[in-house]
Every structure is written in structure tokens, then in C-alpha cells.
Length: 368
Image 1 (spheres, rainbow, N blue to C red):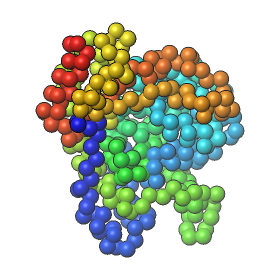
Image 2 (tube, rainbow, N blue to C red):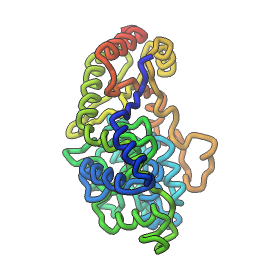
Image 3 (tube, helix red, strand yellow):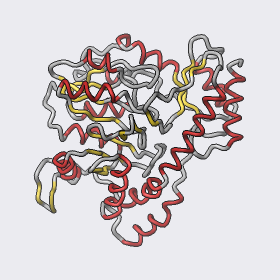
Image 4 (cartoon, rainbow, N blue to C red):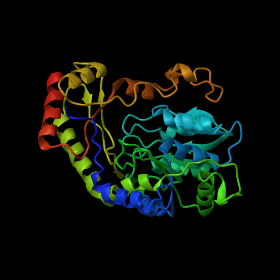
């Protein structure tokens, strides 16, 4: 089997042992070291480490002091954590349809979704490429909106040289399959000193110093053990990203012209870090998306459907009072992409033989 992803954190062994031998394994100096390295990658003054990417989104919303009825606009085509975080923060969710070329919210549909209750714009940088921040950031500024970037899949990505996570408040995931992983973990990035201070207090049960409580807080802390896993990866992020980019280029060249298959685009001015390599299997392809996925699995090629439905199209969200009036048919682009998207292996551990096998097998089963 050629896996859809490979997790290799052996470079962290020395740092993990160092933490274990120190006897202090909770949040400490290793977390600070990780935060400093991450801030350099994200081009921001502050990086606040937390225990997972969902926490990063929740905390970012909480420090904005949203009131009941305040709205957050985001993508209907995303991992469920995006939606869950907004609901947990008690905000009302509004959606804007996406574009097929970058899988992110369309600035035009986003502008149309803004109301006098909208407070936050939350673009999702999906699969490793940013949303169109050249239009979305000015839109937020014009309408007086805060920007929270769901950058869970976009560490190291950029738009016209400006890193993901530096356009407002950035929220990253460090889950096991991400480009940079700490097994579980997350990071919030910002240039705002006051927000950074609030976030650090919030993640530590609302304490500025021991038993000095300033807000009703939470335990959102990262441990030094987790930080130790991530530090060596940050040091070689450029190398890991270059390998992903080379693999994506090889896949796109090999799969170009396959009937019914659209390969992903790298749009002008954007640095794509290829968390996923996601093709679209169109209605005129020899096989449907699900049939192609099954055929690849049978032939030993890992793949993934990210994501099979629009994010709110599940029974548990039906009639939710914080998702007013959302209907699947109102988001035709997101609906079609959810029916067609299929991710192929692009991770740094693929060999030339692996890439040849993926290309040849996809073309063969699609009748190319």
C-alpha cells in the first residue's frame, strides 16, 4: 500500500528524552522554544501554543468577546472543527460559497453574506493553499470585521509573500497527519500584543500568575513533550515543503489530460504547501469519485475524501439555532466539490516509483 500520509518524527527523539529526563513535562521552556520558532515561520510577533487546532479556533473567537447574535462567516466546505468551534464560542454561523480553483470562500459570495451583525470573517486555507486574501483582507477592513484564518492545513503557505496566519489571527493544527505535527496540538498567531496576552491568560485557567485569576479560563496548554516533537520539524519545514511541492508537480504533469479529471491549481502569488493533493473527478469521468477511490484502494494506493459533504449537512446540525437557514442547495460550488474531491498521496516520503505507480494507476482506471 502507498499510504495517503506517513508520520515520521524520529528526529525528535533527543529532545523528547531531554524533556523526560528533566522531570518537568507540562508546559515549560520547550513550549516557549517551539512558539518562538513558529512565530518566525508565520511572520508574526506572537505564537501561542495550545493543545489542538480546534482549541486554537475556539480561543481565538473567545478573546474577541463576541455577543449572542454576532455572526462569523466561513466556508461550507471544511473539516467539522471549523463549524464546531464557532458553535462552541456561541456565535451565529453564516456561510459563503467557495471557488473551484482554490477550494476557499469566494470573495464575492462572502461580501454578499455580510450583514450588520457580522463580526468575524473566517476563511479556511484548504489543502495547503491560502484563500484569496488579496480580496478578503480588504473586504474585512472595509466592513470592520476581524479576520480569523483557519490555517490548520497551511503552515508555511503564503499569499503574495505574506504567510498564512499573519493577516489577522491565525489558527493552526498540529494533528498527527499535518505537515508539522506534535501528535496533538495547535497554535494561534497574532501581531496584536493585547490579544496575545489575553490568549496566554485564557489558556492557563485564566491565571496570569499562580492563583491570580483574571478571567474564567480553560486548560488549553500544550506540553513540553508535544513541543519537543514539533521543534525538529519546524527546523526543516522548507525541506519538507519542497518535497511536497516536487511531488505535486510530478503528479500534475503526469495526470494532466486524464479524461474527466481536474488536477489542483497553484494560483498566482500563492505558495502552496500541499497538505493534500486533491483532484476533482468530474461527471464525465469514466468512473465516479467513489468508484475511483475504491479502485485505487483495491490496487494499493491510499486516498482520502476530504470532505464527503457540506459541513453542516449532517443530522446533528439540522435545525441548529446558531446555523440559521443554511441549505445545501444554496452552495452549489461547495456541493459539487464535495461530490468530486479526492486526495492522492503527496507526502515527502514518496519515491519516484510510488509517484509513477499513482499516475499510471489513476490514468489506467480512468481509461486514459
